[in-house]
Length: 151
Image (tube, rainbow, N blue to C red; front, side, top):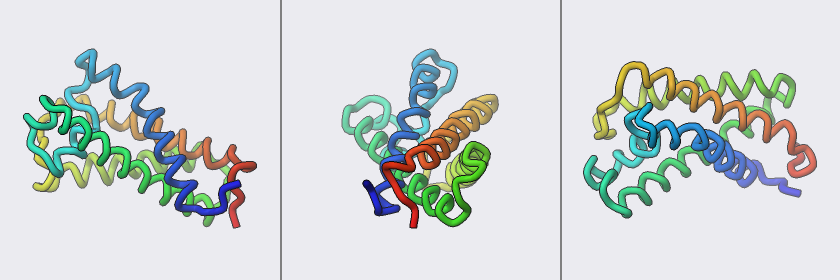
C-alpha cells in the first residue's frame, strides 16, 4: 500500500499523461494538431528545430511533459485528500480544465516558451486532451482505494 501522497500523485499523473497521449499522438501524426503538448513543454529548453529533428529533442520534450504531468498529479492528490473522493469525475474534469487554462492559456504565452505556432481550432483539441487527463486523474485517485489510503 502506498501511503505517500507525493509518490501516489506522481504515479497517477504519469498514468494520466499516458491516457492523454493515446488521443494526442495519433491526432498529431494525422496532422489534426500541429504539435503535441510535449513540444510546447520542451520548447522551454530547446529551439523548434532541435525539438522536431533530433532524438535529444524528443527525449527532452517527453521528459519535461512527464514531469509536468507528475506535478499536476501530486497537486490533484492533495486536492482530493482535502475535498474527499466524492464527485471524483467532475473534480477531475474541472481540474483538467484548470490545467488547460493555466498551461495553454497562460504559461504557453510566456516568452520562455519558444514554440508559438498553433491553429485556433487546436485550442479545443488541447482542452479535450486536458479534460481526458483530469478525468483519468479523478478515476485513478478515487478507484485505487486499496492502493492508497488517504490520511
